[in-house]
Image 1: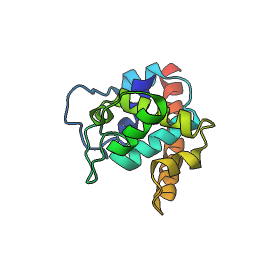
Image 2 (image 1 turned 90 degrees about the vertical axis):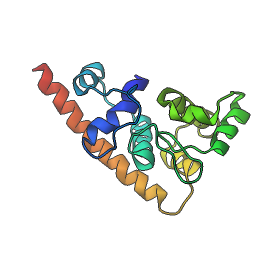
Image 3 (image 1 turned 135 degrees about the vertical axis):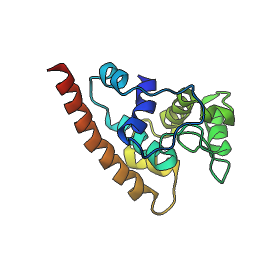
Image 4 (image 1 turned 180 degrees about the horizontal axis):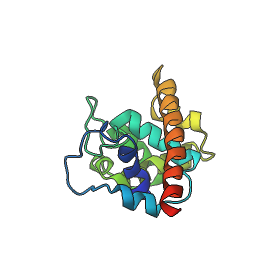
Length: 157
């Protein structure tokens, strides 16, 4: 399930996201459509919107402020997760999609246990226009999820 969540975003945006630099992450449209038949939760859609906003789904991206990975997490973000959760993640872990998802969700388990979408966005990035940008991408993910469900229905007719 984690693999599908992380890897479906680039499929949805076909041609928009840069190719990953490492061949470890192979995305197959048919495999992804067949494996996940249920709809995405609001929380999953939010994470995909943040991922699209931050990295366009490329787990190997490094930003200009020591931020990296799918969510463009900083060393301070990782240190805070380790502090509040007693974990031992390193900043290198943000480049591993599975660990990045764990780190993000661990932060919210402690700081946003109700999974409030607006609070999640503000925890991730407090800058002025970030909330609006992520919410626009969230709406895009919602529309694409409807299309994804239609494609699944078509494949099974």
